[in-house]
Amino acid sequence: MKFALELCDLTRHFEISQGLWKEKRQFTAVNGVNLRIEPGEVLGLVGESGCGKSTLSKMILGLLAPSEGNVLIHDKEMDLSNRMALARVIQPVFQDPYSSLNPRKRVKDIIRLPLVLHKIGSKSEQKRQVVDISRRVGLPDRLLEQFPGQLSGGQRQRVAIARALILRPSILICDEPTSALDVSVQAQILNLLMELKQEFGLTYLFISHNLAVVEYLSDRVAVMHQGNIVEQGSREQIFEHPAHPYTQTLLASILTPDPDLSLPDPESLVWSKAG
Ligand SMILES: Nc1ncnc2c1ncn2[C@@H]1O[C@H](COP(=O)(O)OP(=O)(O)OP(=O)(O)O)[C@@H](O)[C@H]1O
Ligand SMILES: [Mg+2]
Image 1: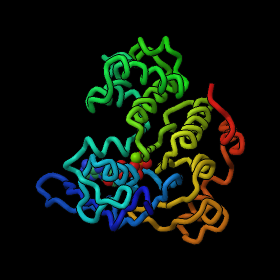
Image 2: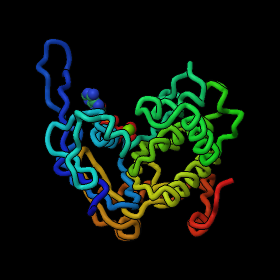
Image 3: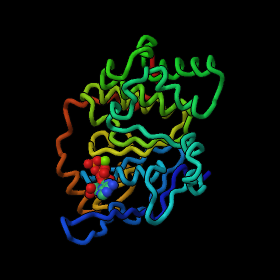
Image 4: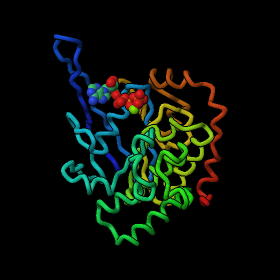
């Protein structure tokens, strides 16, 4: 396998109305994007609000059809007609865990649902897997009986991560996974994501407008501007020698790092085992 994920000329147009009686206009949210992510790599995707990051991630997840171009997963073209197979390989972690978790289901049933849908294991085997993955993401057993509304934001995001991992996918698409969280909780969730990456051998597309976070966890970084990838390179290249004027502007706008976001030492991540 050469690449975990490969985007070839990926493009998405939307028809947008220009007002009453006026003709609709075509708007290109994602414009001929080419990106490759190697197995085990973290690609950080940055860019200002509305530049097309989520539209790109929805196409990768098979939630939105591309207008042009294609997505290759493990060197094979994505098969939109087989969503079940897709779900076993690639899973999302979204910004707002509350809206992506069914408020009327207990945590244990939310995490178990993918196993039920995919008919994996007996009921007792499924229950065991739910307890295992929940402990692994730092959810105490007692929370499994609760409803999402009874959890904190950080706990809800742990539920979303457990649900994303229960099918043992190899790729996670994280779209602003910590942006809705308190800064202290952000660092815990980022730390957890990095530990899980090591342990499960995951590949990440990590979307964030927070450049400190992207610098912290990305191997490579791609910069998006108005639907185009204007620059991509190693973390050092992008953060220390940005070539494109847009990247330079983006970096200049956040010269001072967020002092509240105290991130753990990356060295410690490799060795630490979560309790
Ligand atoms: N279904 C849709 N119909 C029409 N336009 C859309 C649709 N979805 C997204 N867009 C437009 O496409 C552009 C890119 O949106 P997208 O959500 O991908 O941005 P983003 O980079 O994720 O922004 P943010 O950082 O705020 O999440 C925006 O201008 C948005 O209005
Ligand atoms: Mg978005």
